[in-house]
Length: 236
Ligand code: HEM
Image 1 (tube, helix red, strand yellow):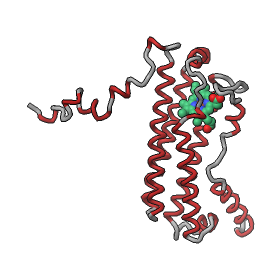
Image 2 (cartoon, rainbow, N blue to C red):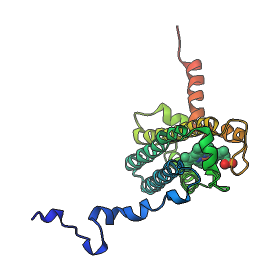
Image 3 (cartoon, helix red, strand yellow):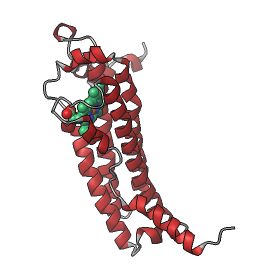
Image 4 (spheres, protein in one colour):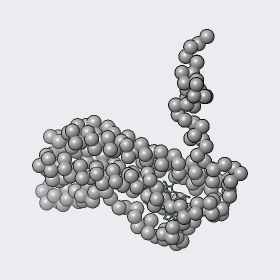
């Protein structure tokens, strides 16, 4: 008999995989067919629930990166921030699945949502808090190194780790802008571009949030460098 095939948590019911991953509870979290207003409620719920899970992981990784920054372990922080960036990327990559619902079918799904809105997403709410802390921590690291952002971008060879940290903030910011951009297109394809959401927010408002940045200076420094180059570097 192969002992490895024997479950270790047999008294808890199911295989070790089912017990540890808690598949029974997880797979009971979607609306059952007998309650559906439309069969696409399953697609809609799976995309939203998995987004919440990826965002939960993103927040945990950013919070762990913050601990590392506080201990001046910048390279380690970068490793966790790269994971968070990928988490946001995965939430974006699953958004187009929602466009596989026909606009009219979605109108039926929508009747099941009440006043539910993405504005109340715990994943995004917690992400906003963690990103705000990350920006504070980036500013603190710059102050600790006695550098402006422009000075950092002009001295990358001497400040490699801090530069990588700054660029990971840009990565996270850009991933969020891409998410918002794809999200707006999903909205426009599904309910239209001049209507309002389940909480009454005009789509126009969501469209205007697309390019909001977590730290404007990270983008402005590129303008500053171009201005400096115009003044200092000769071009033929
Ligand atoms: C058919 C798919 C979707 C539609 C039609 C849709 C529609 C909307 C609308 C109309 C709003 C404006 C607020 C309101 O509801 O009144 C909104 C906001 C929002 N939605 Fe969605 N949404 C969809 C999918 C998703 C998914 C998968 C997520 C991921 C959790 C999400 C997260 C958000 C967030 C975070 C906001 C706040 C605005 C922002 O931060 O950009 N939405 N959505």
